[in-house]
Length: 168
Image (cartoon, rainbow, N blue to C red; front, top):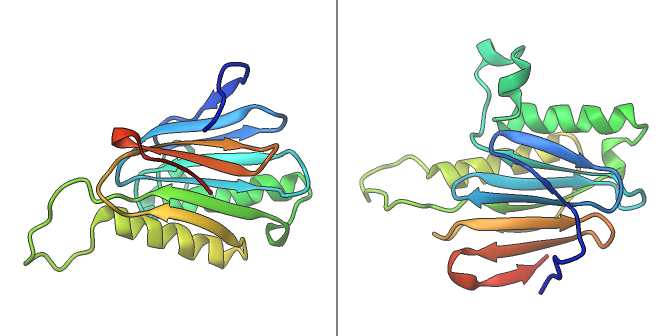
């Protein structure tokens, strides 16, 4: 699958996002209902990976810089702004995402969508709002994931709990 022996990793924690401006791989683990989204420039070696915990930032928290990375809407807004600061418009970006699993059985009576599904929908909506094309996704199911993004190849390596692996 993916040779990790000679590579440097930038680890992305929960409710955070990090940048790779060279050849460092971006990695996050523990994606259950959370979404790991990578927004990158297909023509420059610049990528951002976010580990998103919840769909929407409460309005009273929009100004809280430390909390903005936790939510799909504000995190993606900040990442798009980051790329604009580097003179890359959102229309010249691409995205891939994984996660959004339903980790716990839901009652059939419950009408609310699972948090994993709501997270995936919120990320898609935010990307669409900023005209960032979502090129590939691996979401849903009931298994956690670890993802690794290679800015050099634009490959997103996905390892699910219990060994299933794929590349998108």
